[in-house]
Amino acid sequence: MKSFFDTNVLVYLFDADSPEKRRKARALFQKHAEAGDILLSTQVLQEFYVAVTRKLARPLDAAAAAEAGPVSRNCRWCRSTARSSSPPFTAAATASFRSGMP
Image 1 (cartoon, rainbow, N blue to C red):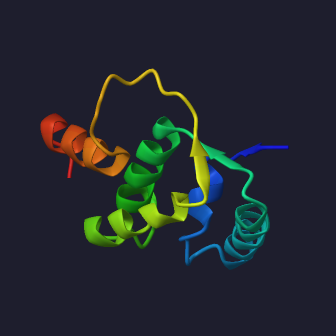
Image 2 (image 1 turned 180 degrees about the vertical axis):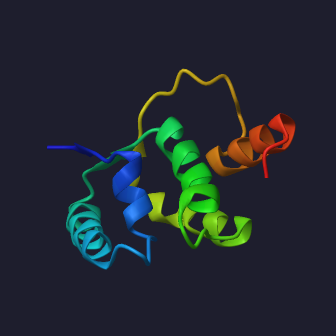
């Protein structure tokens, strides 16, 4: 059975200020990654990029957030309604730049 991971679970993988949630998210992600049954959407990855670079108390810099992308290597992609050929992190960074947000 496939498991769809929400943005919040991915964000907690990198949230140093929530150690218990981080531990649980890592255990859950590891379990499902080993089974090869994780589903992620492009939207979730875009939301992840924005959250970890702007919303965490100690946000990741853009390079570190982009490196977190390999977290999706063991995942299948869900269809997205987005009409972009850009990778999710590139699209999120471009959207941020265009909107004038830091």
